[in-house]
Image (spheres, rainbow, N blue to C red):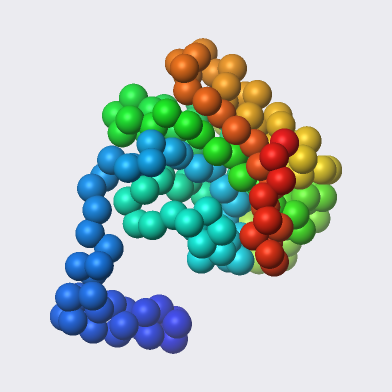
Length: 182
């Protein structure tokens, strides 16, 4: 295990033994009835909840690369539907961010990095043979604003999403936390 993981595990032991978890007590139902799809960017770990004044237990936060739904029947959409039908979510926020690493992501460059790390072309071809358009799947977006608008449309227009759920699009500044509505 890495040194960083060892440090986190040591902290976790002290966290539990010191009962520091008590200040985070909440139910699984989000009290603000909001689900957020946001980018996994490390700058958003504390900034996003702070910029929205979110406390533990108030919202469901789903994170992935780029805050996008890459497949209408994939895990992100499934999570949003579970949030709506099982956890009482009434509003969904799609929050991309400026200076996103997925913007301009090019599949050929990413595939080259994979092969340099030991992933054989046979394995990449196998993924393609499973019905995945690898180049499309590993390509980013050109403009974050357009990506957020497209994701909002996909979620709002999903055949299993009820019409009474509001879907909102935003782009957050990863430095100041300022939100721009799309």
